[in-house]
Image 1 (cartoon, rainbow, N blue to C red):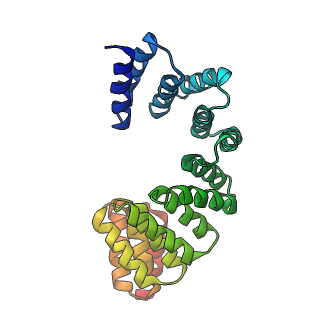
Image 2 (tube, helix red, strand yellow; image 1 turned 30 degrees about the vertical axis):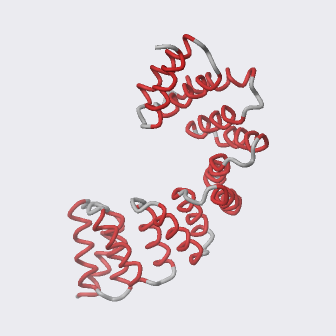
Image 3 (cartoon, one colour; image 1 turned 45 degrees about the horizontal axis):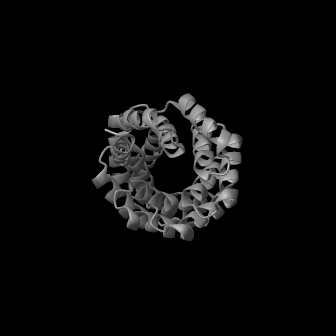
Length: 254
């Protein structure tokens, strides 16, 4: 195969999530004819394969001669984010955003960094910008909902968790976090409805079981609260919150 055929094969494998195979074909393409597009893909493969040192070297190499292309700047930021170097990641994302402010993924990752820095208002701003550019992002809606949850704006949090689930019916975190928002609003019966739906989809979710027990306790249904605490303790006997709630329930029933 020539360089172009290797590249096309690699790109297809990359889109399918076959990163190790894609890396092999991108390298074959690059050996025949080196391009910055191919190098950028190679760096992205390294990110997905968690070879962050190799990824960093590739993106820095590209930027030595192509500093005005936002993709390697952005991808270098992704490397620093995975390494936990939040300030370096933020600098890269800001630089990429200055080059091209109309990329939803750059705005999204700006939100990720600010959320990790506990700057929820700033995170909210960038998640919203990302959604404005591409409204079908379940993860962006989910994370925006988490910002609202942290900021105690529970109605807006519910709205975003609903949006996340509409865009992706497999987004179980949206159902769970909707339950948490409803608990925060003392809407325990509605929270129960959501948490029980979640448990039907994921029967071994201990956190959901614990929250169900908590909801039953809050509405003074000690029988069901005890049932769900027992389910948690059957799986995890040393669960701290479950044991504390069991003591409360025992004192109420004696």
